[in-house]
Length: 113
Ligand SMILES: [Zn+2]
Image (cartoon, rainbow, N blue to C red; front, side, top):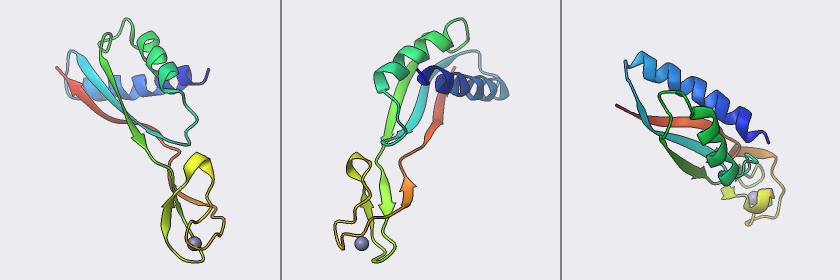
């Protein structure tokens, strides 16, 4: 389950940011996940509990911000949402290879104490 290693990276970033702000506690962690990032939100929540235990982020709230997959169509130039990861332009029917967003998994923000 790669959610654990992903959350591990989020934890490192979060702890470094909290330290930079002189915070003694992280109360909430907001993570942005793209629709095509291939992560399971439930697994991510579980991983969050596991990796944050025994840190100043133990017991923090995990907020997931879901980002839709957006493609840019080269022939007609219109951006569109890639449902189920299929980048088929609804306007002209071309298949796009240009994904604008939807694969991210990143730390969006923190709530510190
Ligand atoms: Zn198009």
